Image (cartoon, rainbow, N blue to C red; front, side):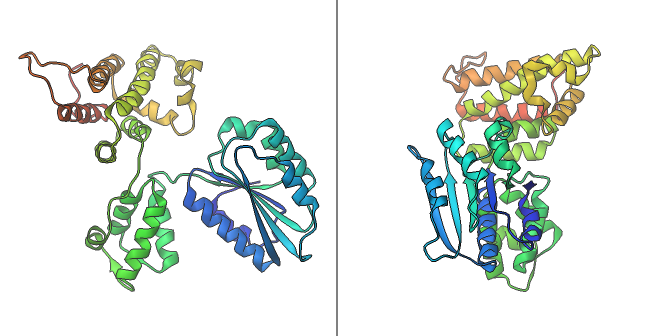
Length: 352
């Protein structure tokens, strides 16, 4: 069965299952879920704990040997296998063998230090593991769900926030739960038993949001101009290169420039996406593409792509010239990129 961190507390009220898989790209939730699992195990009599690291050269046979050995003190025990890189075929088979013959006195926890992508989740070996286990998945919290996470976290710590303060803290901590959790703990130390406002947040916290270029792409296609500009500025402050951003934009715009004309001719969006643009078929990105191509006429996407291509060439060192022959500085490229971002979101679009 699959489980998310917010459902773990109720699950842990029941006797533990013999095998747990922990995965995901949100380290705070993954590690806190592991802590909760250990605490529940201690309450249920698991006293001995051993950790095995699956690193380069890992011989999975040692896991089987460990499982076959008796507990040193004849008590219930926990075996944690930390898997921080992809496993070879021999190691995968050893994990499946171990899972098919789990030791009676042992709680086994396989901790994947990365996100289990769809291809891996569908593989025969992983499906076999998942069938006989509880798979706890710690996904990155998206912008829509971030306020609910902050509300729950603050409430669990006894921190009181008004709605504006909560939303501001969620915005400033997006993509970086660990930093946001630390800010909540700091606020509690500074202002115990106080209803916090935006003024408290601005005075006591820093903007620790973390984004990548594809967060910007998704936000542009969603049409959220204010958030797109904020993401662009955070990316620049974080040292993300302009070519990295324009490269992600160009990828998305090439798809839109091919999909939009087909939709305008009457094809369904699903048919227009076809196999060539399958990345846009996901549950997350399909609504973004639908929103974006509804916002702009089909012919405009090619012009967006041309503007991005010009910025991309300049960002890679081929600096363009204005008509009067003056080189445009790098700062101007960022300004033009922000203008393009606003246009993609539907603000001040250029003439058709």
